[in-house]
Length: 296
Image: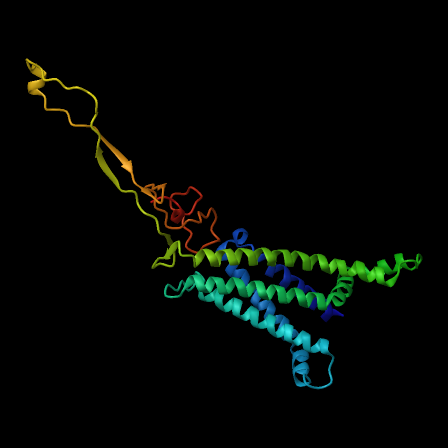
């Protein structure tokens, strides 16, 4: 009984913590990294608690065992491998190592996609074990006996309705995770398309530099037309002593692709307003925006 409750609480914390890791804007990069290490240790503890089951199923995998046991083993293998690769890619591109020779864009994309696919595998596992989750949750919160006492006098509620209601409880947790996974998958695809788009060039220091043309301002002399200039018969003193006035110089900006070119050059167009989206976030002037997203 105690081991079942321990497993339930461990899995609940592991699942909730894993979901929090997807909100990088909320945690920031430093807390995200530490939470990732903690979740990794929790996943390792989960494996240690179930190592006997894993060894038994592996030994009898091609023997007479239920197909559900084979599916669970495959899911557990995929989830375990996913957590390992998530932690590995996260450490490689972390601010702790600060490796400058790696392709940060590629590692970031791999880290995000591995996290999303591992989340979907974890949601499938939750659906497979929904009965155990509900039953153990009742023991953890001491509501199972109270529900039984309330239901025994009535005896009108069918078992199918009860199972449906209990399944919906797990479905809420799975639905929240699915929404987060779909949103993060959409965001990851957008980031990948953005990072590898042809409109931006990779800089040497891992950043993406917009290929923008700096405005070139050339002096254009404009001469007033249609004004008859007649020579003066007697030049005045001011005319003889003052130098001749030059035509006014009016700067004009060139057009590139029928669009006016400004003189603002931005090194990163994301304009992050909080440290978390990028490990190169800096705010030296204290205006709440990343320096790389402001005009030079």
